[in-house]
Image 1 (cartoon, rainbow, N blue to C red):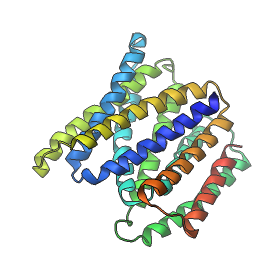
Image 2: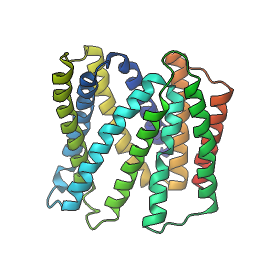
Image 3: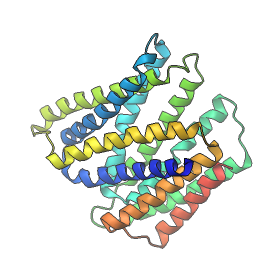
Length: 288
């Protein structure tokens, strides 16, 4: 049952990325992008509110602050990741984005005195050639294939900062207020997206309304985000972290690679093959 849930989470994760890549062609203005994100975040926000409403009694200031930072980071990270997907390979984007667990790992070592083992050091070292090879691929990209690495690295760092915020929240006196923390985060992301829609519409003087197909894809992406969060929360209580996280990351990478090949005709060559090899080894070793 656990492995079925893990596969479901990975499939939803890669499916969400492929939906964003598919819809990105119609997001040719900032206003349309933020309108799409507003729709996605509204779904996650609504579900988080319904599931956690009964726990919204007394909310500490630290929960509100961390939730706002979470929402802002999530909104900007999604912008960067969507731009990267629009220009680059879905599999390579999933690979580099899987390294977003490194910032919270280092924060745990520096702030919470978590153990820093030889395996963690070796895993981080193996990440470097994977990134270097990806940067070279970016420089050699053909039409539409250049420039995806900078927004991708920024997205990875921002998703990593979300992991740090989650760790801080779970180690604070308000650790029991997880539902409120997530709701405030998604509410912030929704409101930020709505403000950006208004700003972009005024600046670009173009309609922000997406075609019906892209509206549907945005809502489905929101539903998939809900499923991912619920399933991962369930798995975190059922499986060891040393087993769960590397398996989840590797499954997401492989399913994104397969999806990119099937739906976008993305091919695996020697350079991105080595990038995947170093990346997958880094993930395995970091979780030993």
